[in-house]
Amino acid sequence: MTIMEVFITSSKPPASQSGVKAINVENGTVKTLKCPYAVNSISLTPHKSYLMHIGTSKKDVYGSLFASSSLKWKCRLNSNITTSFITSHCGSFVFAGNSEGSIYTWNNLGELMSVIKAQYRAVTNIELISNGSFLMSAGEEGTCHLWNLADLCSGSDDDDVTALHSWSEHNLPVTSFLALPNNIMVSSALDRLVVIMECCNGQV
Image 1 (cartoon, rainbow, N blue to C red):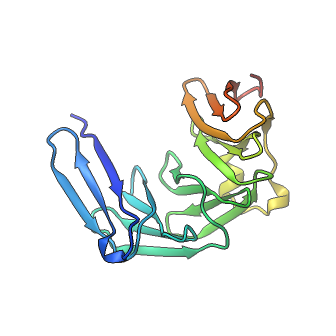
Image 2: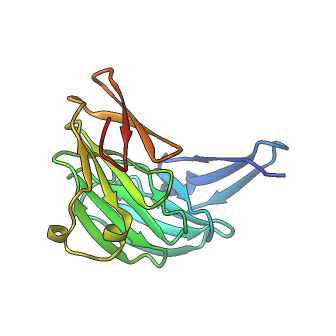
């Protein structure tokens, strides 16, 4: 039987009040992990059970083991994280977008593999399409771009990586993505439009 858990974080200072709660929806039990630093948001990798934390400054990224909450690595960034963390289907890579329009890629050892300029303005959303081989990004300017995961994870220079497809149907910031089967991505934005994108052929 699959056990569902909901993760709740606290970002209230001081750090002594910060932690992660795992609530077992099936039986109502709660597991609390104390963290020695303030936590802004988290992402749990599927295989190695790594927790990705953002500090309250949104420039400090932490990787820790969920079972013990022991800190494994830390990365200080130059720009604020503006999206949730997502992980590759294999659990080996972690992605996030920043306020300058770039996408960060880390491996699960905490090494920053690449920083790719993806959007003209801040990245508002990132999501993997259903086959797990491509990543969609969106920005405050309203554009959506599709990226090859292999390019993001290869450590290539920014100039060597280009989007496979781009969509500009929105004219206000994109607020959410929904990945559907058959590599379909749905986006919504402040312009009240919902756009359905066929990622393989770049059509809507």
